Structure formats: C-alpha cells, structure tokens
Length: 529
Image (tube, rainbow, N blue to C red; front, side, top):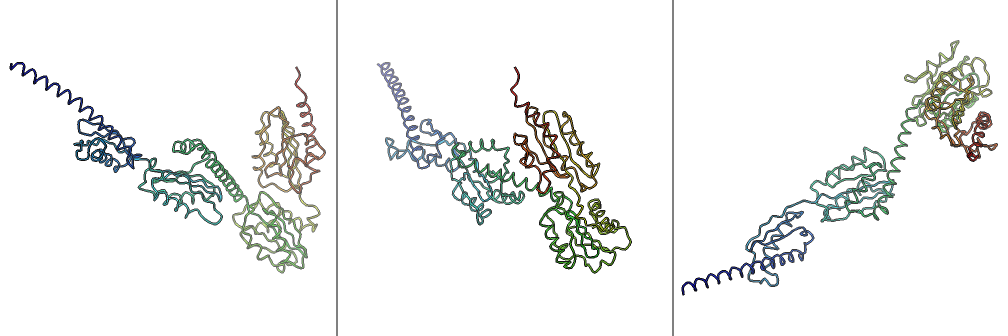
C-alpha cells in the first residue's frame, strides 16, 4: 500500500513540475511581450528602439544600445515598474522581481554644419542635437556674416535621433571667424562637426562632400536643388577672386611708372612709361596747370609692363619750378610714390645728369632709353612728336608642322629670347621667322611675359592659330576660321590691340595667311580612298 502511495506522490510531483515549467514558460513569454509593448508604446520609444528584453524567471534582462544614460535608466524603469499596469498582469502584483540592465550606451556623433558663401548669397545647412544648439550656431553665424545686401539662408534642423549635443560648441563658433580672416574672400565652402573646427572644402573635394552629406541624410533632391548650385557658385566666386589676387600680385611686382621731365626754353617735355591712361591724363593736366605759359610735349607711353596701381599724389602735387631751369635747361625724374628730383643743366652730359635724379632702388635701365631720348631732344631741338618711337611687335601663326614668326624689336637680346622660347614651345615644328631689329622701336624692359605666354600648338589636323603681341606683353590668340581669309580677317580676329595699325599687322600676317589658306584648302578636301 505504501508503495502505491509513494508512486502516486511521485507522479503528482512530476506532473506539478511539468505544469510549473509550462506555466513559467508561458509567463516569461507573456512578460516579454508585455515588456516590448510597454517600451514601444512609451512617449520616448524612438530612443529605445534598439533595446531588447528577455525574462529569466521573474528577472528581466535588458540588452541592446541607447544613446543617452537617461534612456538606459528609463528602459529599466518601464520594465521594472510599468508592467504592474500592463493588461493581464494585475495592478497589485508586480511579476518582475529584479532587472538586470546590460544596455550599452553609444553616444550619437555631434551635429554637422555646411556653410557655402558666394558673394551676397550664403547658406548654412546642417543638423543640431538640440534647439539650443541650433539657435546658438545660427545666431553666431548670423552675427558674423549678416550685413546690408547679404542673403543668409539658415537650414539647420534639430534631429536628436541622429545628432548628439556637443560639449564644445565654442570651438566651432570661434574658428569660423579665424578661417574667414585668413582667406579674405567672400566665396568659399566650409564644413564642420559641431564642437570641432571648420574645414575649408576645395572644389576637388566636391564628390567626397556629396558622399558625406548623403550619409548624413541629405537627399538627392535637396542636393541637386539647394546645395549643389550654391556650392558651384561659391567655388566659382573663390576661383575668380584667387585669379584676381594672383593678377594683383603680378601687377604689384611690375616696375613702377617713371617720368622724365625736361624744360628747355618755352617747352616742357614729359617722357616715360606709366601703367594706366588715367595716370597719364592726370600728369598732363597737372603739367598744364604747373606751366601755364609753356608748351607741354606729351611723350608718355601707357605700358602694360608698368605697375598700374601706385600712389602718385606726391608727383602730382608739386612740379619742378620752371624758374630753376636757367638757360641750359632742367631735367627731373619722378617715380611713385616719390616726388620729383630735379637737377639744372650746364654743359653736363644730359643722360648722366638724369641718372643722378633716379630714386634709390630703381633700376637705371628702366629709365635709360628715355634719358637718351631727352638728351637727343636737348642736343637737336627737334620736336619728339614728329618722330615718335615705334611699338615693338610680333606676329605668329602655328599650323600643321609649321610656325611663322615675324615682327620687329629694338634689341638683339629680346629677339634672341623670343626665338629661343618659340623653338622650345614648338620643338617638332619647322620655324619660318623674320624678326627685324629696328632702332626706332621702344626698348623692351622684360621679354618674359611674351616668351612665357606662347599659345599651345594645335592638332595637326586643326586649322591652326594666329597670335599677336606687343613685345614684352602677353600674346593675344585666335583660332583660324573661314573669316581669317577675308580682306579684313586680321581685324576680325580681334588680336591686334587698340591703337596699333591694322594695316601694319595685316602686312606682317600676309605670308602666313597665304600658307594658312593652303593648309585650310587641304583640310576641306575629302580624304582619298
């Protein structure tokens, strides 16, 4: 009998254990489902989407990731206390006896900013981790860049699911002002993570920037419509300003203008090179006021090889007095920013006296040709306007395997330098040249601009190019086309500078144009089979 009782009790216990395990499993499943529902229905569910929960008996085990410590604690609170109010669990009984919180904290990266400036149009684009951070950044950029006429668009959004709040926003705010001061331009693109310094984005980094912004949530439509056009405008603006700055630096390195003034009898001769027509006009007007009873002879030349921006106030303010000229005359030299330095003449060598009036630091060779011209004027008394110096010039035609080069210059050194440059530029071409030496040509101070600006050789099958240059200045180039062979083809090419004789240029180009026409006719014939 006892044996049967023992077996019955064992069977009952086994059934109870089996029932308990089934019931416990169902309870764990129910608790996990209720916990997931509680997390997903919470007001801050978007911050808890990467949290998972499972139950080990009545112990809740939380895993996954959140971006903030507060959300880690909130998840434990929801599971630990919130299930008491879950349907089917009961308000009086909390089935969760403990919570094991294994949630990892992975902070979000800070927000990002993109600033594109194209003159008066400026765009600030980005994402901030909070309203306060967005306002702080937007207001700082506005204070720095807003001024009359500026169109500033701020497109900074708050997205606390993709961006965290930076602890060091001042680093970003302060570095922008420094970047703008260092560039000194109003066309640029900058990018930064909030809390880090701004980085200048060059045009060559455009594709990488697009990939970066796409990864950060900028849509293709937003890129094409809003971002890309302004970036292109900003880079174009910067390119133009860089070119302008390079050109200004080049011009600043040019020799300054110089004027040699000579007074003899009732005449005042002004001889020299200036950088602009405006300065020449001011000098002549000032001379007419300074010498009302004398005839002013204008022999000033406007040269592209003279510095155009100078401080000429001193030389315009006070001209040498004609009373100091005496019977032999007077010479003076002025080089901006200095005023006139004059010397009376006796029986001295005029050129030597002029050299004594050249300011220290100015190369005498720049004034030498004009000193000789003034000395000749004193010696002969002839009117310099009756026999003015000629402009040194060069004509060039490049086509097939030929180079035609003609012109005239004053010095053998200039002729040699140009020829050497042409031979190096077109090593595989046959050179046909006739550059004449003419003492009446104005001297060339520096032939490098001409030597360095030779146009590239066209393809063998191309019609060719023709070019014209005042020696010492850069070449003007035009492609050969059907209008080249018209009677006014040289004028239509637009390569001869204003003031130079089109007839002289056309005459110099005539043989080259005949050769170009032969080459053109060959190109028009269909290839033989």
